[in-house]
Amino acid sequence: MIARSESGSEAVRVWAIRALMIGVFVIVWKVAGATGTFNPIFIGTPEGTLRAFVLQFLEYRMLGIDLGYTVIETLFGFAIGAISGMFAAVILFRSRAARRAVAPLVVAANSLPRIALAPLFVLWFGLGIAAKVALVVSLVFFVMLTTTLAGLTQPNRDHEYLARSLGASSRQHILYFVVPAAVPTIMAGLELSLTYSFLGAVAGEIVGGTYGIGVRLTIYANSFEIDKFLALLLLLVIVSTMTVQFMRHFSAKLTRWHAAEQGESV
Amino acid sequence: MAFAQANPTAAAVVAKDVRFRVPAGPDVLAGIDLTIRDGEFVVIVGPSGCGKTTFLNMVAGLQGYTSGDLRVAGAPPKAGRRDTAYALARDALLPWRDALGNVELALQIRGIAPEERRRRATEALGRVGLTDASARHPAQLSQGMRQRVALARTFVTEPRLLILDEPFAALDAQTRIRMQELLLALLRQFSGTMVMVTHDIGEAIILADRVVVFSPRPATVTAIYDVKLGNRERKTTELRADPEFGRLFERIWNDIEREFEL
Image (cartoon, rainbow over all chains, first blue to last red; front, side):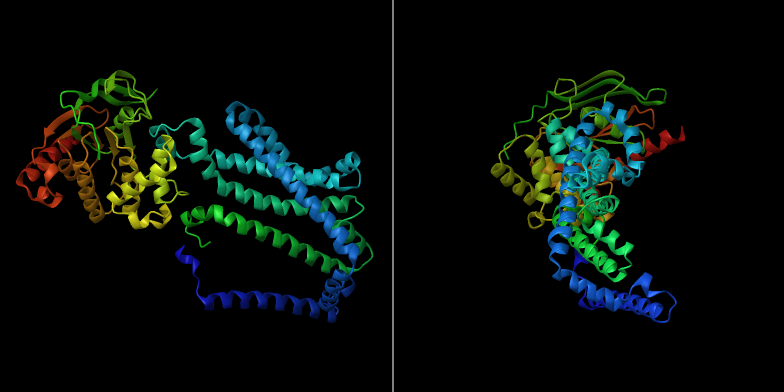
């Protein structure tokens, strides 16, 4: 909390370093293309990418349809995967036997590269939204299952003793001790899941689809329109970063105590 | 403070040959015999790791024993008794609740209505001198303040039996003396029974009516001392300056040391 008020001069320095990094990157990129070290056909140019970035906003199909599809797939998949994953975690939390029974399955499912399922989902659900949502759910479900379960089952002997000595019922124990302690872990899981959701949606579109950012990326790459490709990638990064930031802003309120415990600035 | 009157003839805690053995391990308690009268302040001292806390956990009903008989207010010990409050060695504050919320927790679990809960918790925080810190979270409190919040949480339910497990172990020497002073002040308005464990002999003498000395593992009761210093009326500095304090300190110290030489 004390660390929260950073000095103004440090904020200026932070932004200066960021600007410098971007500047250096753009210069290296430009020089590499101009001197022929790398062929601009493959790496594009900074000014071409910037032009493509601005121009893509003028194209209705781009923003209205393709970005819309990707965002809808992402958010639907995220919501379904997160809710079902947390729900499953709560069920497993209530039963130690069930937890032990499914533990190896969860590990196996988690280590499976879910993207490999994408062709199967296309086969089952077609080229529309459903196949991408399914892929996103398959990613998010297990992330939320494992993080929620980890959050709910973290042991704290002192709190156990306190709960028992105060005569807390099992409902009170879960409500006042277990769930609040799990919130920071669950919020971290949700943040990770959101990033995974964008990944799943775009990857699903690349494997097979009619609309979406992933479809466009494939088309641009195949037709050597690298500037457009990079401009679209930049847009995707901006959208997903904004979404994650929005969520962080929301979760910071809930987990401020945790950050303070860790001695971090919020 | 409306405490029921103490009944000095009744026993708050009776232990008869209480033994505890870890399965396939050594004995922890080798037969504890101890009677704590209603309204009495008893402090248990002994070398670290001797099983003092284990015994306290048994009284609190948090842990079972292997054999013997243990009675709390005439009944077998049970965790979560409404007339008992247990303060753990570490403050065990919930980091996501502010100071007031932590004190309220004990009342919340008893199903007390929000307004009354708030009023009583605020009053309890006032008694430990933390009125201004009620909205601060544990991470924003010093060790001493955290322990004071824990004390407020312990007293807010107006218990008849107070169980304290080395409540000041984590504090620096100066804060510890201040906390002893505070606890003594709180105990002056308390007519129930207190059982406390500490490894600090001076602290034991200051706070106790009787000091019980445990032997090293497997623990038995080595000696019991009546403290006749008039603790409940005097300041800790006065008590420490009393020649009787020094004499008691030396005898208890020798008791603990002698056990070690065996």
